[in-house]
Amino acid sequence: MIRLININKYYRTGEEKVHAVRNLTVDFPEIGLVFILGPSGSGKSTLLNLLGGLDKPDEGEIWIEDREIKSLSKRERINYLNSYLGFVFQEYNILKDLSLKENITLPLEIQGYKKKEINEKFKQIINDVELTGLEKRKVNELSGGQKQRIAIARALIKDPKLIIADEPTGNLDSETSHNIFNLFKRLSKNRLVIIVTHDEESANEFGDFIIRISPDGDSLQQYDTKVGGENNE
Ligand code: ADP
Image (cartoon, rainbow, N blue to C red):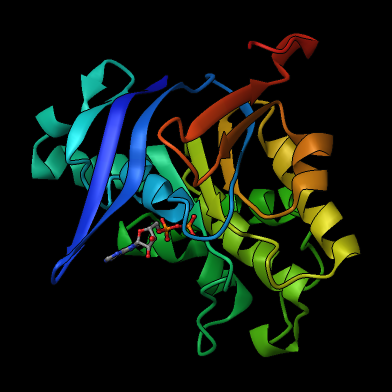
């Protein structure tokens, strides 16, 4: 369970102070597909970084399960990043010198998992993300959609409770994007998936819950939920 309470985040560059996230309060569901929509510069990536523990809010509380993130020690925060959370980015972050398998199993290799366990998990994951049969391909011989599936598989391989994706279909054509959103939808049946996108249409089609961030005025955020077919507002 993730809960944000009255979050504010500022950036200071020289004389300028940017209010990047304003008075944001939101309860995320335990499982499901959540989209964050909003114009460029409205604080979406900042919000993902806060949720991912990569940055800290200036004001407010971030509760993950029953712990407030500021109360976590450095080691606990790293554990959270390693086990609770998987990140997916727009640019896939595929390492060209590694094979498809090495790209996906990297988090397990780093943690010293046994070969047998890595092989078993790899087989399961590439089946889940529909990459089976492409194991022998070089990663530069794969399409954008296939590369994004590798990135999703890498985020998934440690079975995280939360997947965060920043514009994961930003470099993909509409048909491939549709397939990737379908995959996220399937993955969100038993975990929470939070996606930042500009793709309003897909958010409406696939999202269980939509957070809209608008840049004008003081009341910057509106929440719009479709959970259970009801609108909360
Ligand atoms: P979005 O993801 O919605 O495009 P961002 O979260 O990237 O928005 O940025 C929100 C605001 O904070 C913008 O005005 C941006 O210029 C500013 N900002 C983001 N990161 C930094 C930073 N590291 N230093 C200074 N300003 C930043």
